[in-house]
Length: 303
Image (cartoon, rainbow, N blue to C red; front, side, top):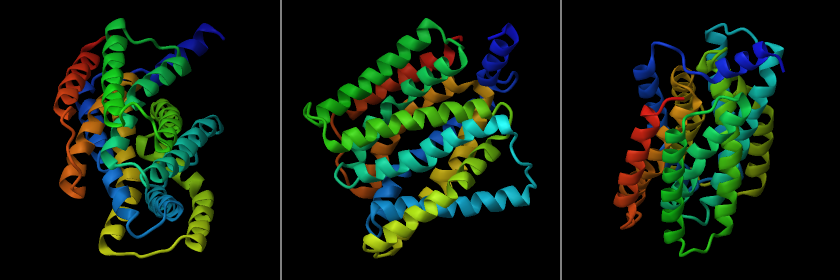
């Protein structure tokens, strides 16, 4: 690899100069949007099976994304963009939504959200390996402490016995981390809205097949709550939230943006209590305090 190639790879993940505050705000709004994804998915499961919910989620998001691309007259991505878009499509549009939906059949929303708390560290690691850009030791220390706090909380809630749902969640977070890192890299060349829009449209044929399979083998009882949940995960979790997320990543860099997601499990815990009537674990406030300190350190650490 030449020095120019290395510089190009690093620049693809480096933050854009001049917009750290707005980038942090956009990424934080994306995190807030994603924090409602698990409760909304739980709502959708009251009327749809996991395959049906995942398929319809992706299909509806594909229609919205297609309309956006047509309305904005977005040009086709260049050939060099498509491998990354396929990674985003596979990780963030198909595999992660399906595995987390399957997990939520037997795992509580609160527990699932906390397992996914390792996602920020996984995203930062993959981004570093993919681009060669290395955050500081202070960043890695804070990211690791945050991940350990979240994992300890998870094991405490499961009494040290991971379940099958946890396996779904762990595999899901790894593929999602790859999708986040690639999406953040691509957002240096393409607008964040186009990155997720093309990824969702690319997955549309598979999502239509998934929907057809689900509708054929799973019962459907579309009540108001199920439809509201499905509408949210299709319009916000699968599209609008990513527009904010990838734009924020482009402005402040993938590693710093990813660590904002340490707050997502705790936000989801609050939503699970308010919307689903689940119990708030006693250890949640302590974990929240540790996580917030870790987020503050990662945002101040230099790359």
